[in-house]
Image (cartoon, rainbow, N blue to C red; front, side, top):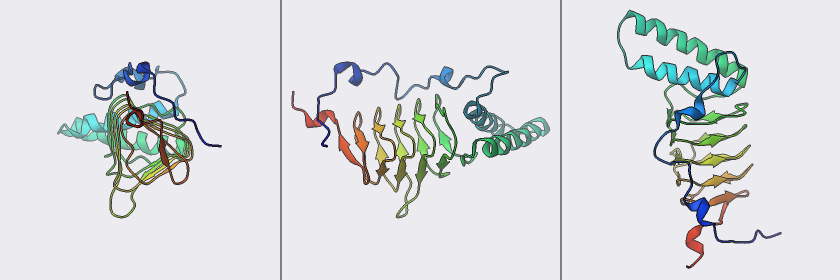
Length: 184
């Protein structure tokens, strides 16, 4: 069944979530709550913070952050390297099985579901824009760019660029609901 191509409502184009300014409240985790995704991100943020500082206290805190990261990586089954460039406001609701190449750049306020792979193919890695939603099981491979406010469907295999505000679905992924497809 062919998906109908409908113009995007203006409300979606003027998204209330920024693609450039991180919303750090999205990563907040209450102290005594069981949120493995937020805890994994917390360990990454702690390492980033202490990696910029020097001295014995910073070295000890980096070591603690590394052990926290290893623990939460095992608990979640996620492979997100410590030095990955991740913008603020990332939501990882179900971190099980997420694999991210260390050279991938992820913009602010993104949402990544379980079993997502962001990896290399033919010598390059993807660059993810701001406020991108990536569905469960999606694979984004190669030197491609995912535009701001884009959506990647569940189980999509994305091997080509996705423009801003577009949606990519299927295997291999094709673009649907892109505003440029609709003349005004």
